[in-house]
Every structure is written in C-alpha cells, then in structure tokens.
Length: 158
View 1 (cartoon, one colour):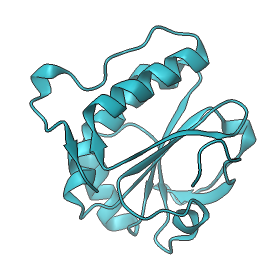
View 2 (tube, one colour):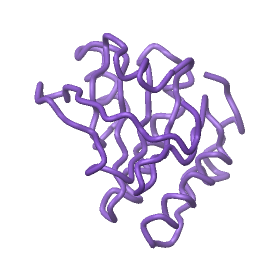
View 3 (spheres, rainbow, N blue to C red):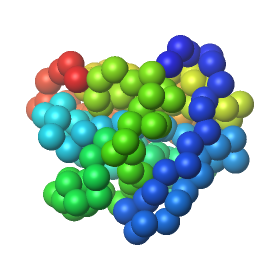
View 4 (cartoon, rainbow, N blue to C red):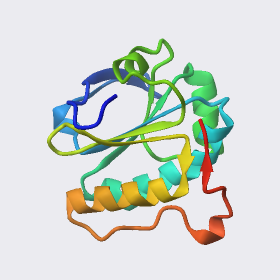
C-alpha cells in the first residue's frame, strides 16, 4: 500500500470469534500482518508486544493480523506472550486490501486515517523510528523498542 493513501477499513474475527471492525474510529493504529510459520514474523513478535505495551494505553492501537487460521495463531500468540489484540485473515482479504507482498509487514496509520509509514521484514532501526512516529502522533515520549542488548540482526527480510 502506498504511503499517504487512505487506510482500508477492515472487519475481521478476533481469537474469541468476535467480529471486529478496524476503521477511522480506530486510528491511529499499527496493523502488523504476520504468518506463524515465518521465521521473520517470529523474530518480530516480541517487538510488536513492546509497541503494544508502550503505546496502547495512550491512544494508539497495535493490532496483529494473522494470515493463519485460529489454531496456529493462538499457539503463536501464546508462545510469544502476546497481550496485543490479534485478528484473523486466513482467506487473505485484508492482506489483499493492503496489497501485502511479504510478512511481516507493518502499516502505521495516523489519526487522519492515512498510511503514514510501512515496514517490511524486521528492521531494528525502523521499529524505533516507528515508535518515534507513534509517540509524536499521540503526544507522549518515544520509547526505544529494539534495544542494543536484544542481540537481534539489524535487518531480516520477510
């Protein structure tokens, strides 16, 4: 999805089987598309949780969107200790709406409902830059998401 384009509204099922709408009333938000079998999605998982912990209490939604059915998604979320909301897109409808090509891919959607940034794969500096953009949008101090002691690669493609 091109930056500065309006974000697509979504209606997806969560892990409790409830239908959830993600639309203009839900911005600002990070939509994090992933696949449980993807090694790069596994690498990125703890940092999505850190984004959620850092910013969800201050008005930004961090939403994980799984390309898997419920079973593998629940296992993935549990293995990674996720408390962030997880939505299911096993048929790829939301992935197509966002012209997704690789996972993980994150879309930062600002208050105006525009895709303000995207990250493909795992990019340590990119996660920290994204955290700064979120913080600026919601008016809080930025939090470093990927720390030097995390001992993760600077970049891994999706």
